[in-house]
Amino acid sequence: MNAEDVIAPMLAHIPIAIGIQLICWAIGHALGAPARASIWIGWFAGSAVCVMREITQREYQWIEAYGDGLRRNMPGYEGMKVWEWNSHSISETLAAIAAAGVVAIAISIANRR
Image (cartoon, rainbow, N blue to C red; front, side, top):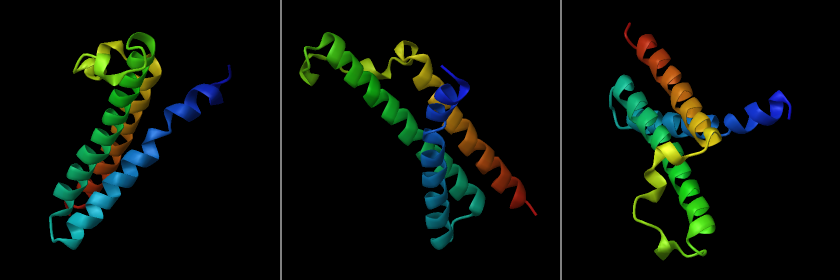
């Protein structure tokens, strides 16, 4: 396994999180909301999408491994057990949250002036 096989999938959530963040920023701008508020709401929305995707992936893994392929066999909050996520899911999600955070900080600083 080379570095590209490890890093490239980890970066998959980043454009999704930042894309959602920028869409929220644009909507906020169009509605007259302050830029800082809009970009941080966008950070939250983009981050939430990535977290929810990983929760769903964990649910699918559990259903396949323990639930006989049936969603109804899964306990209610199984996907939210972050401590049971694999390292790839955790690193991919944290990378997207951090990248969107950097965008939010940069725009917040730029709009202070």
